[in-house]
Length: 138
Image (tube, rainbow, N blue to C red):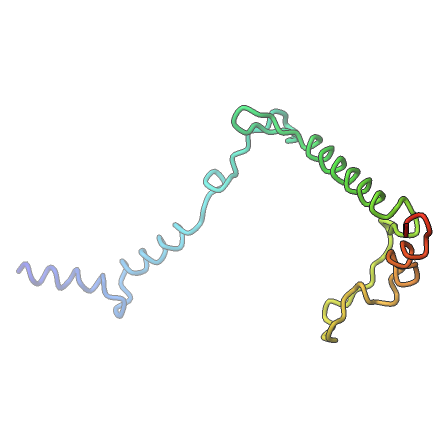
């Protein structure tokens, strides 16, 4: 009698019989894969509702500070580059200038530095400037 009951129950677990249990399992498996907003929300500890600053351990990090740091680094690099190029404007590149490049080019030994459309191909070379300038050459 006990074996007969397990046989009857067994048919509900068989996928071939398309029993109730496999379908419920598949439904539960699909529903478990969905996550609620509460489970996936990123925890953010902003000091203000705009989210411009956050706390990391005991320090407050503000996005304006990151922007200022970035601008300071750009200014420092620009100053150093001006010193390296002898304060000559002909060696600087306008930040809004379009730089021609062909990233899909398969031509050997070609790069955007060699493209004749770029402005620096029409400007004097740094080495030529040093060699022809008497003060720098000495």
